[in-house]
Amino acid sequence: MKPFHLVLTLLLGVGPMAGCDSTEPTVDDNGGDVTPKTSVVYEVFGTYRTCNIIYRDSLGVDQELPEEPLDWIDSVKVPVDESFLARVTATCADVEREGKATIRLFVDGLLLESASAQGYGSSGTAQRLLSPSS
Image 1 (tube, rainbow, N blue to C red):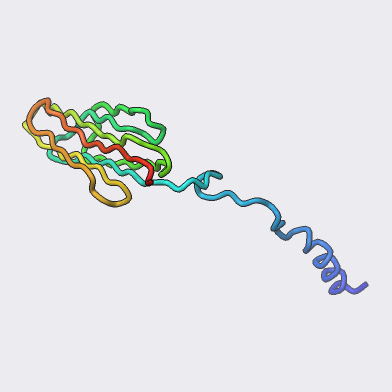
Image 2: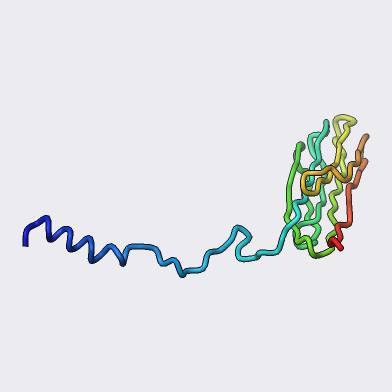
């Protein structure tokens, strides 16, 4: 057999084994979860250097971030078919100066709640109960 024919025979013989098997299931970006999600974005920004921030994660558990530098932003995805209390609180006590912070809550890109904290040791909370659509 000529070298050209040998290479062609090998390629044709190995080719089908090297292809993708289209029967394998694909996983979506949600790790297999196809439940529609709502995007919740929390923001705290202002003239303070740091604030103690408590926010509700996607599982409904409060997460505490002591002395978190500002400007701070985080987002979670929550199922649209479940109630969820979206909440972020900032307590600010910059020892060296009086400051101001704005606390905001966005859902699917829309600003739903805003609060502020001004002065030493002040706090503010932005929260909204998200309910399934009827």
